[in-house]
Image (cartoon, rainbow, N blue to C red; front, top):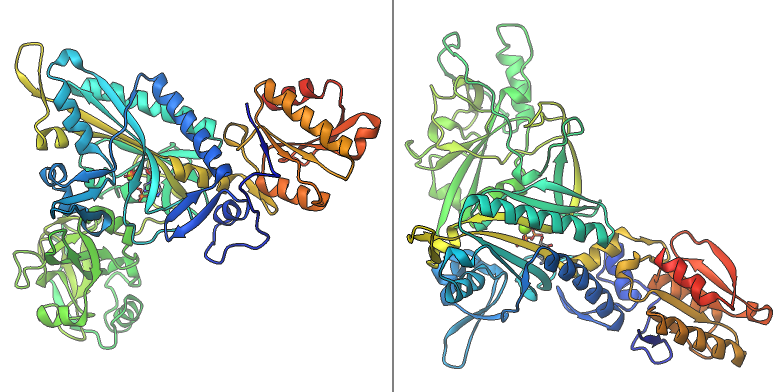
Length: 589
Ligand code: ATP
Ligand code: MG
């Protein structure tokens, strides 16, 4: 093992937080000299950062190898054709980096590599006897993220482990998926952060079963819900609201349109209803009695713009992420004044379902919340300025084109699995596993001969870990006000040995302790800087965050050094004789 000497290490720690950083992990990784920003979402790994990255990679590699997955490496620079064959050249829209070679041929920088893995298995394998096989790579990916964020957390260039399983049938895929799931549990346990496994949307990839590993973090971009009663957990994007039973509506009067002046919002509408049109049963109108109609503009990957109307219970907002996940790969844009002008049947502020749906006058696709089942009665826009329709029955007075999961999910909402109340929390997506199915194999014609000699389409799984994101995520979960506190398995070195004072003996003793430790397989960061004050050295050691700090200084005269635990702050004197064994006991537990 090596000794990293701070006297010559390519490192400058900073006292000030970088101006562009908001999250503690981002500030600390820059200040402690692990990474440097080159451009938004693009970072340089400095020597300390490289070590952490390599250690994370090692954990991932060991656990992938342990389930029999085989490592290979594809190029990042890829020709367009395979991505055209699967439709992703267009579907990725603005999210990929495209470039041309000198002859004008199109290339891209790989955002993920399903196509290449599929084609390579097709190249080399032809029989069911070759399967199952799982292949992986640890590689730099490129995505032109709309909002690069928080340093390494959302980069435009980042390191991902992606693996793919190839099986002859569903049972095989289930097994490969399960093996990956177990490997991911071991990887994230070793990385030392708290995480939850949640049901996920399969998203643009197609396919069916899908789960995410989310590191729990207040600052996370993902929201998930869990049920404390039954253990159900899902990314909020994937929550399926339980639909109530359809109900009879014979007793509901015919729909009628009423004047509702000054009621462009749900709150003003409810007030107006209670004043002018009190309910027959004497109960008050409230927001859940109303159906809010929201229209957005979908922009499809091929540039096509399509209006989409949503019918959502009036007490709920549209959740942009849930909506976005449902309409992917299309993106959602606001419906502008000029869009309204182009669709005169849509009356801003007073749109109602009677004018919506592909079979209606507007021809605008109309999708409703799952709670809007046949027989439910609503108050909704009357399609004329200042008017609303009452006793509007789904399935009788309007027929939606389908259902969409776009309404916000709130704490206390019924758990889709047991019906009790859900709780929400935030997290960072660290890993994603999903059963891709046959989409890619079909698009790229990956078939093998089965046991009876027939050509069969191979079934695939796809599994990703954010390797560079993990570095930020571990930092986010392991720090205090003064610096980083790495878990042992990913720390840049095992020990930070600090030599303090002016006495030459101190430096000689520290140097020989470092060499002895290194000979025993311990990685040492040695602060052998001369003329740097003990205060600065201690501050740096706290900022850098190696979990075990050994100080060689004043105690040396009486034959002791100080052993400090970065996490607990606990410190104790140990004898210099036997210090190597004592330090090894400390770090290897
Ligand atoms: P997100 O929803 O966070 O954008 P994704 O679902 O698009 O991620 P996948 O395609 O599932 O990401 O990629 C697999 C893993 O790669 C993710 O679980 C995440 O850990 C990591 N990852 C994805 N995008 C980035 C990025 N821009 N920067 C760093 N890591 C990323
Ligand atoms: Mg994902």
